Length: 127
Image (cartoon, rainbow, N blue to C red):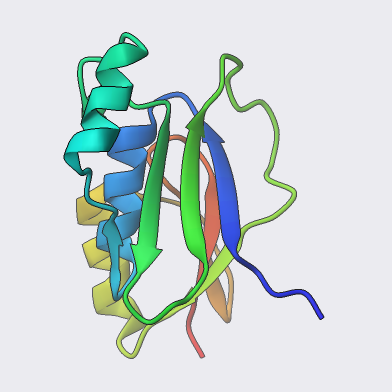
């Protein structure tokens, strides 16, 4: 049987989007860079982590990793896959996510559809 290792998100700016999702998700953080990774980035012509075309966000409890990879084309249509989030206090969580840069797209009886700073849809469940 297979299990999810990574969820890959195409984006224009991997580092800031990775920081958004690391802050949005409980127990997740942007993976730290060691000296070898920084040297690899410099050898490829990137100044550092802010310019990295692929940024990893990891879960402390071994959950699926999130990879943010730079792509040249902009997002044009609705996501074919999205994340559903659950919070103990959905109202407070909605406000917190908004403070991180998410915006509300639609309100439904049992969920709120939001977009991350690059327009990728996700849902915050109310029940």
